[in-house]
Length: 226
Image (cartoon, rainbow, N blue to C red):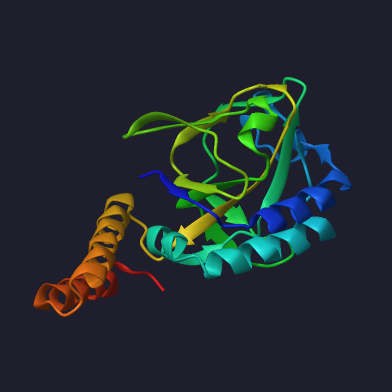
């Protein structure tokens, strides 16, 4: 399941993030690549301990907590603090799969990467290339979203970033451990929640709304890890 989450950040928040990131201390992204990914990774990143990354990451996490579509799609239990990358001058990241478990730097905690997320911080018309290509059971999908929008997709997906041939692509990326480990169960709950929301708006007093809501929470209770 690949889900677009619109308007995670406002136009003003995106502009402020970009202003700060333009002055940040970027390093070679290969420094954090695994033994396989290092062969296909060519970008720049902020280090995980960079104060700028921590500051902007907190803004993103606060926005996500308030975004009902993100909560419905991800059912988050743990989130790796957001990281930031930059592509320009032909830089790219070839096909790879993210590690199954990520440490949270500076803590003893580990996060299972059920879901991967990319939050776009550059308007698509400001750069050429740079599409995120995600391949999974739903087929290959090319993603290039407006600044402030986020895409959520299974952490098990093979994915890549196409070469950026003009301009600069800046984004945030991170991983989520969901309360629902299984992708198919998570999809069922997401679609059911969407149907409940539609019925709530169109026929809030109908008995099926209560029945569906009861079923949703019983399934969540049965499947969730907390």
